[in-house]
Length: 235
Image (cartoon, rainbow, N blue to C red; front, side, top):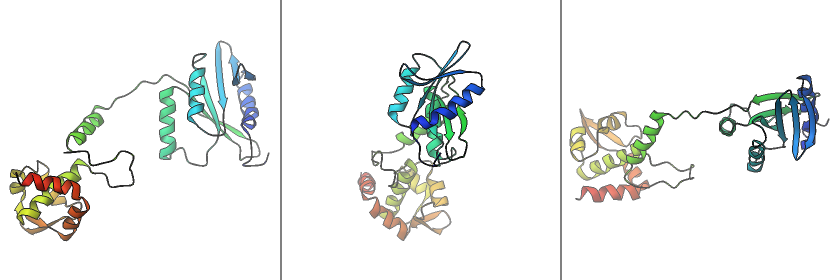
């Protein structure tokens, strides 16, 4: 076999050999199913594709009307299964209760690897993460992020809080954490000033802070939300 050049049907023989060795009766192209394997009362259906697609997932999900033992088989990818891409795909397949088979075609003798078995999936909701998302969303004063724009800096509640503090310092010059909290900057004011994660603040004396040049540039960069807080401070 020429390495790197193969068709979907090239996946058939390695999987056929593997399942036959496991004691299954294996047949190809049975009522639109790429592979059907039977052992006793167990029925397995495997769909073969060169790459993962929404169409393939839909096709495999449709086969679940016949049996719970549905797998999709793909050539083994070059990208590691530990990559974020494949971690996400594996989670999705678990949610869909679909099995996953890889066939390493870049070998003299192709090797079959069972990555996932189609087992019932129980959703485990994380209360802490849920509460964190709600807290983050409610901690933002407005909608300053565009969904899908992951290359841009995200306006988090923390960053927004820091901008509010910067606006206060811009207006009043030097302030303490207590002064700022009285202006409504919130309970995280001291930690934001002390950690100075963005480098926006300058400690001029014990407990006293002013706005740094970096902070001034940040207000210009985030002018939309800075203007929001400037107007708020005029009230």
